[in-house]
Image: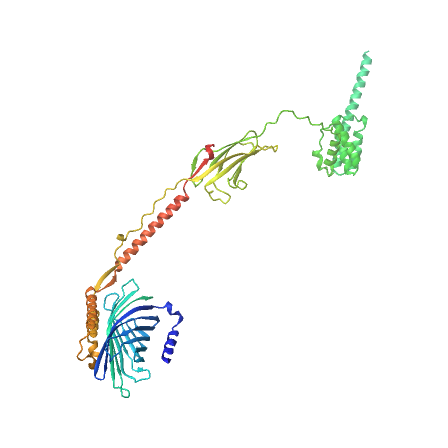
Length: 215
Length: 372
């Protein structure tokens, strides 16, 4: 609950004048494949998550939020179906039009028949969008290292990282923006009591379609 | 009989001589009195004149008139006004047309006043004026004539307006806007008794050319007796003749200008490298970042290759298509600027010439209804 309150505070701290600044908003779909290694076995689930991502830029500072929700199914009896809801906030310093460095805080909620589990993922983020030499066409590389992450009421995460690499295209003269990236996430959860270490990874294609205003 | 005749003749001679001497004395007395007046001795002058005015002085009528006048002057000088008036009256009774202007210098300031007063007192009462003839008075009229449809140049414009009173009178003309006839814009008058034309310069009180519109021309006349002729009014329509203007040329077409930029295809090798590099990164991402425990024995992710290929192809396309860089052509920019400037100057000159032509367009004056 404290994490959610902090998230709300960050969102409320967004300046009132943000609407007059460059702003972007996307709808996104994540065709996700989840793999879990536990007790020497690998369980695999698939699913389609939907969500949105938006950002507003104030000078060289950019505040972004994103949300995804969906289900992952097909892991068998040992890996029950889950409903996932994840919300993230990023705060970037835009060093150049093609590079931004900042911090990320994310809450991820897993709900299954076995109960509800919450992850807190906090760390740094770097986003690169270098031009490819053709107007509006750019590469995308987004990497987050989240060392201050833990499972709520459970063990900490020894490794938490997210990466998304792909390309984007924003046609000249139009506010539309299209992104196609490959997303990969890795989480190593430390052993806790009788539970051994558990490794999870999420990967798949993310498609984002949105608009940018005030470029 | 001869002796009787001789005595009578002698007596006549004596009488003639006596009369002649008396006349000589009268003339001497009058001349002496005149000299005494010159010397401001009115009393001496009066004594001499009294002698000349005695009934048996033998003074002639002219001498008596002269003596009375001088006597009156002497009495005036002695402040004896009533005696002076009496003397003047007697002189005027003898000669009503007698004047004393030539004696004014003899000092009595009231000489002319008193003398003329007596003249008026003796003058017969004026007769009542004869009743005017009962002939019917001829009314005074004025004729107004304007030129037929005429066109006048703006500079030195003169619209002749002919005025002809029916008899000797002073004719006048006034011009006002038909919309405000009570406020004359221009007026002129002919000399008394003259007939002829006055020239309106088509300008109002402010000296500016009157605006196109309807104007009322009103002619009047007044004779020396104050009789006025009924006003005669005409309306003229003033308009501007079409000005000889030039049409503005159409705007310069795009083809008239030289290209100010040249586009150069710019292939970005770095873009190609980035695209291919990111594509490779996508392909390697699962194995490079994933744990071997999770990926061992499982097939690779085809979606990763799909994205990797897309990104790499995007980089290649960007490289092949290349970016277009625009390079300015300063010479062409300069030539185009000169062309625009020349076109603007030409247009400004035409606009100015047209304005001048409209300003100097002749003025057309038409009597309304075609009636001059």
